[in-house]
Image (cartoon, rainbow, N blue to C red; front, side, top):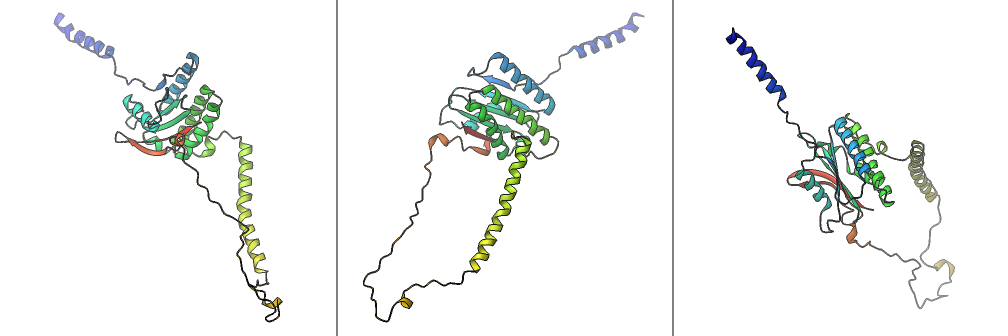
Length: 271
Protein backbone atom coordinates (compact mmCIF):
# COMPACT_ATOMS: atom_id res chain seq x y z
CA UNK A 1 0.00 0.00 0.00
CA UNK A 2 2.82 2.41 0.80
CA UNK A 3 4.43 1.73 -2.59
CA UNK A 4 1.11 2.68 -4.30
CA UNK A 5 1.09 6.14 -2.71
CA UNK A 6 4.73 6.86 -3.66
CA UNK A 7 4.21 7.79 -7.34
CA UNK A 8 1.37 10.34 -6.79
CA UNK A 9 3.33 11.96 -3.96
CA UNK A 10 6.43 12.18 -6.16
CA UNK A 11 4.43 13.78 -9.01
CA UNK A 12 2.91 16.30 -6.61
CA UNK A 13 6.35 17.27 -5.33
CA UNK A 14 7.66 17.72 -8.89
CA UNK A 15 4.73 19.93 -9.84
CA UNK A 16 5.19 22.04 -6.70
CA UNK A 17 8.88 22.54 -7.48
CA UNK A 18 8.06 23.45 -11.12
CA UNK A 19 5.49 26.10 -10.22
CA UNK A 20 7.72 27.59 -7.54
CA UNK A 21 10.68 28.01 -9.88
CA UNK A 22 11.35 31.67 -10.80
CA UNK A 23 10.32 32.57 -14.33
CA UNK A 24 12.96 34.59 -16.19
CA UNK A 25 11.53 38.02 -17.00
CA UNK A 26 13.34 40.69 -18.99
CA UNK A 27 14.14 43.61 -16.75
CA UNK A 28 12.99 47.02 -17.90
CA UNK A 29 16.17 48.96 -18.61
CA UNK A 30 14.45 52.13 -19.81
CA UNK A 31 13.85 55.02 -17.45
CA UNK A 32 15.43 58.28 -16.31
CA UNK A 33 19.23 58.41 -16.08
CA UNK A 34 19.75 61.80 -14.48
CA UNK A 35 23.50 62.10 -13.94
CA UNK A 36 23.17 65.90 -13.97
CA UNK A 37 20.62 66.16 -11.14
CA UNK A 38 18.21 68.43 -12.99
CA UNK A 39 15.10 66.64 -11.65
CA UNK A 40 13.87 66.23 -8.11
CA UNK A 41 12.68 62.87 -6.80
CA UNK A 42 9.00 63.62 -7.42
CA UNK A 43 9.55 64.71 -11.02
CA UNK A 44 11.72 61.69 -11.72
CA UNK A 45 9.12 59.36 -10.24
CA UNK A 46 6.34 60.92 -12.35
CA UNK A 47 8.37 60.59 -15.55
CA UNK A 48 9.23 56.97 -14.83
CA UNK A 49 5.56 56.23 -14.21
CA UNK A 50 4.62 57.73 -17.60
CA UNK A 51 7.44 55.78 -19.25
CA UNK A 52 6.06 52.57 -17.72
CA UNK A 53 2.56 53.38 -19.00
CA UNK A 54 3.95 53.84 -22.52
CA UNK A 55 5.84 50.57 -22.14
CA UNK A 56 2.66 48.71 -21.11
CA UNK A 57 0.42 50.32 -23.72
CA UNK A 58 2.66 50.37 -26.78
CA UNK A 59 5.48 47.89 -26.06
CA UNK A 60 7.97 50.70 -26.48
CA UNK A 61 10.90 51.66 -24.26
CA UNK A 62 11.91 55.25 -23.51
CA UNK A 63 15.03 56.51 -21.79
CA UNK A 64 16.05 60.00 -20.68
CA UNK A 65 19.83 60.44 -20.51
CA UNK A 66 20.70 63.72 -18.77
CA UNK A 67 24.41 64.43 -18.46
CA UNK A 68 26.98 67.17 -18.26
CA UNK A 69 28.49 68.47 -21.51
CA UNK A 70 30.22 65.54 -23.26
CA UNK A 71 32.25 67.89 -25.47
CA UNK A 72 31.77 69.63 -28.80
CA UNK A 73 33.77 66.98 -30.67
CA UNK A 74 31.36 64.19 -29.71
CA UNK A 75 28.60 63.15 -32.09
CA UNK A 76 25.55 63.46 -29.87
CA UNK A 77 23.38 61.09 -31.92
CA UNK A 78 26.11 58.43 -31.94
CA UNK A 79 26.55 58.92 -28.20
CA UNK A 80 22.84 58.30 -27.55
CA UNK A 81 22.73 55.30 -29.93
CA UNK A 82 25.72 53.68 -28.22
CA UNK A 83 24.04 54.25 -24.85
CA UNK A 84 20.91 52.42 -26.08
CA UNK A 85 22.95 49.49 -27.38
CA UNK A 86 25.10 49.29 -24.28
CA UNK A 87 22.07 49.24 -21.96
CA UNK A 88 19.85 47.13 -24.27
CA UNK A 89 17.18 49.84 -24.51
CA UNK A 90 14.49 48.84 -27.00
CA UNK A 91 11.49 46.55 -26.78
CA UNK A 92 11.39 43.10 -28.40
CA UNK A 93 13.42 41.74 -31.27
CA UNK A 94 12.98 45.01 -33.18
CA UNK A 95 14.38 47.02 -30.24
CA UNK A 96 11.76 49.75 -30.58
CA UNK A 97 12.78 52.61 -28.35
CA UNK A 98 13.67 56.26 -27.91
CA UNK A 99 16.57 57.92 -26.13
CA UNK A 100 16.17 61.58 -25.15
CA UNK A 101 19.74 62.84 -24.72
CA UNK A 102 19.86 66.18 -22.90
CA UNK A 103 22.91 68.27 -21.99
CA UNK A 104 21.78 71.33 -20.00
CA UNK A 105 25.27 72.89 -20.04
CA UNK A 106 25.59 72.58 -23.83
CA UNK A 107 21.97 73.74 -24.25
CA UNK A 108 21.36 70.79 -26.57
CA UNK A 109 18.67 68.13 -26.78
CA UNK A 110 18.79 65.14 -29.12
CA UNK A 111 16.17 62.50 -29.96
CA UNK A 112 17.30 59.08 -31.23
CA UNK A 113 14.85 56.37 -32.33
CA UNK A 114 15.77 52.70 -32.53
CA UNK A 115 13.98 49.80 -34.23
CA UNK A 116 11.39 49.60 -36.99
CA UNK A 117 9.28 52.33 -35.36
CA UNK A 118 11.86 54.91 -36.43
CA UNK A 119 10.40 54.82 -39.96
CA UNK A 120 7.11 56.19 -38.59
CA UNK A 121 8.80 59.13 -36.86
CA UNK A 122 10.11 61.03 -39.86
CA UNK A 123 12.64 63.88 -39.62
CA UNK A 124 9.76 66.33 -39.96
CA UNK A 125 7.97 64.79 -36.97
CA UNK A 126 11.20 64.70 -34.95
CA UNK A 127 11.81 68.38 -35.64
CA UNK A 128 8.26 69.23 -34.63
CA UNK A 129 8.77 67.34 -31.36
CA UNK A 130 11.92 69.39 -30.81
CA UNK A 131 10.00 72.59 -31.61
CA UNK A 132 7.43 71.74 -28.96
CA UNK A 133 9.88 70.88 -26.18
CA UNK A 134 12.49 73.60 -26.75
CA UNK A 135 9.94 76.30 -25.91
CA UNK A 136 9.96 75.02 -22.31
CA UNK A 137 13.73 74.38 -22.34
CA UNK A 138 14.42 78.01 -23.26
CA UNK A 139 12.53 78.97 -20.10
CA UNK A 140 14.49 76.35 -18.10
CA UNK A 141 11.31 74.37 -17.44
CA UNK A 142 13.00 71.01 -18.00
CA UNK A 143 10.34 68.80 -16.43
CA UNK A 144 7.56 70.25 -18.62
CA UNK A 145 9.79 69.86 -21.67
CA UNK A 146 10.20 66.15 -20.91
CA UNK A 147 6.45 65.79 -20.38
CA UNK A 148 5.87 67.43 -23.78
CA UNK A 149 8.15 64.87 -25.44
CA UNK A 150 6.29 61.98 -23.83
CA UNK A 151 2.93 63.49 -24.80
CA UNK A 152 3.99 63.81 -28.44
CA UNK A 153 5.50 60.32 -28.34
CA UNK A 154 2.22 58.80 -27.11
CA UNK A 155 0.24 60.53 -29.86
CA UNK A 156 2.67 59.36 -32.51
CA UNK A 157 2.80 55.76 -31.25
CA UNK A 158 -0.99 55.60 -31.08
CA UNK A 159 -1.24 56.40 -34.80
CA UNK A 160 1.79 54.41 -35.92
CA UNK A 161 0.79 51.17 -34.18
CA UNK A 162 -2.73 51.46 -35.59
CA UNK A 163 -1.28 51.52 -39.10
CA UNK A 164 -1.74 55.25 -39.67
CA UNK A 165 0.83 57.82 -40.77
CA UNK A 166 1.91 60.36 -38.17
CA UNK A 167 0.93 63.80 -39.41
CA UNK A 168 2.32 67.10 -38.13
CA UNK A 169 -1.19 68.14 -37.06
CA UNK A 170 -1.33 65.07 -34.78
CA UNK A 171 1.35 66.43 -32.46
CA UNK A 172 0.90 70.13 -33.13
CA UNK A 173 0.27 72.27 -30.05
CA UNK A 174 -1.50 74.97 -32.07
CA UNK A 175 -5.25 75.20 -31.31
CA UNK A 176 -7.49 73.67 -33.98
CA UNK A 177 -9.15 77.04 -34.74
CA UNK A 178 -5.79 78.68 -35.43
CA UNK A 179 -4.73 75.68 -37.50
CA UNK A 180 -7.83 76.08 -39.68
CA UNK A 181 -7.21 79.82 -40.09
CA UNK A 182 -3.61 79.14 -41.03
CA UNK A 183 -4.56 76.70 -43.79
CA UNK A 184 -7.25 79.08 -45.09
CA UNK A 185 -4.64 81.83 -45.44
CA UNK A 186 -2.28 79.39 -47.15
CA UNK A 187 -5.05 78.43 -49.59
CA UNK A 188 -5.69 82.08 -50.44
CA UNK A 189 -1.97 82.60 -50.93
CA UNK A 190 -1.68 79.62 -53.27
CA UNK A 191 -4.64 80.90 -55.33
CA UNK A 192 -3.27 84.45 -55.46
CA UNK A 193 0.05 83.51 -57.09
CA UNK A 194 -1.33 82.24 -60.45
CA UNK A 195 -3.88 85.07 -60.46
CA UNK A 196 -1.16 87.70 -60.16
CA UNK A 197 0.94 86.01 -62.83
CA UNK A 198 -1.99 85.88 -65.24
CA UNK A 199 -2.81 89.55 -64.59
CA UNK A 200 0.79 90.58 -65.19
CA UNK A 201 0.89 88.60 -68.44
CA UNK A 202 -2.32 90.17 -69.77
CA UNK A 203 -1.20 93.65 -68.84
CA UNK A 204 2.18 93.07 -70.44
CA UNK A 205 0.50 92.14 -73.74
CA UNK A 206 -1.38 95.49 -73.76
CA UNK A 207 1.86 97.52 -73.98
CA UNK A 208 2.23 98.66 -77.63
CA UNK A 209 4.95 101.26 -77.38
CA UNK A 210 8.41 100.20 -78.54
CA UNK A 211 11.45 101.69 -76.85
CA UNK A 212 14.12 103.37 -79.03
CA UNK A 213 17.81 102.88 -78.44
CA UNK A 214 18.84 106.22 -79.95
CA UNK A 215 17.60 109.80 -80.39
CA UNK A 216 17.49 109.91 -84.20
CA UNK A 217 13.82 110.89 -84.34
CA UNK A 218 14.40 113.88 -82.07
CA UNK A 219 17.35 115.45 -83.91
CA UNK A 220 17.94 116.93 -87.33
CA UNK A 221 20.44 115.29 -89.57
CA UNK A 222 23.93 116.18 -88.34
CA UNK A 223 22.31 118.61 -85.92
CA UNK A 224 23.82 117.01 -82.83
CA UNK A 225 26.98 114.99 -82.51
CA UNK A 226 27.78 112.99 -79.37
CA UNK A 227 31.38 113.23 -78.29
CA UNK A 228 31.22 111.08 -75.15
CA UNK A 229 29.16 108.13 -73.91
CA UNK A 230 29.00 106.68 -70.37
CA UNK A 231 27.18 103.74 -68.80
CA UNK A 232 25.53 104.70 -65.54
CA UNK A 233 24.25 102.04 -63.13
CA UNK A 234 21.58 103.03 -60.67
CA UNK A 235 21.25 99.61 -58.99
CA UNK A 236 23.78 97.39 -57.29
CA UNK A 237 23.42 93.69 -56.45
CA UNK A 238 25.30 92.34 -53.41
CA UNK A 239 25.42 88.59 -52.72
CA UNK A 240 26.05 87.48 -49.15
CA UNK A 241 26.77 83.94 -47.95
CA UNK A 242 26.08 83.01 -44.35
CA UNK A 243 29.24 81.92 -42.57
CA UNK A 244 29.03 78.51 -40.92
CA UNK A 245 29.22 78.63 -37.13
CA UNK A 246 30.76 75.84 -35.08
CA UNK A 247 27.91 75.86 -32.56
CA UNK A 248 25.50 74.85 -35.34
CA UNK A 249 27.32 71.54 -35.90
CA UNK A 250 24.99 69.46 -33.74
CA UNK A 251 21.91 71.53 -34.51
CA UNK A 252 21.95 70.35 -38.12
CA UNK A 253 22.21 66.64 -37.33
CA UNK A 254 19.12 64.78 -38.42
CA UNK A 255 17.97 61.71 -40.33
CA UNK A 256 19.17 58.11 -40.48
CA UNK A 257 22.61 56.97 -39.39
CA UNK A 258 24.33 53.76 -38.27
CA UNK A 259 25.95 52.80 -34.99
CA UNK A 260 27.67 49.47 -34.53
CA UNK A 261 26.17 48.23 -37.78
CA UNK A 262 22.61 49.04 -36.63
CA UNK A 263 20.37 51.67 -38.20
CA UNK A 264 19.05 54.54 -36.09
CA UNK A 265 17.24 57.82 -36.77
CA UNK A 266 17.52 61.01 -34.80
CA UNK A 267 17.63 64.78 -34.68
CA UNK A 268 19.39 67.23 -32.41
CA UNK A 269 19.05 70.91 -31.69
CA UNK A 270 20.64 73.69 -29.69
CA UNK A 271 18.27 75.99 -27.83
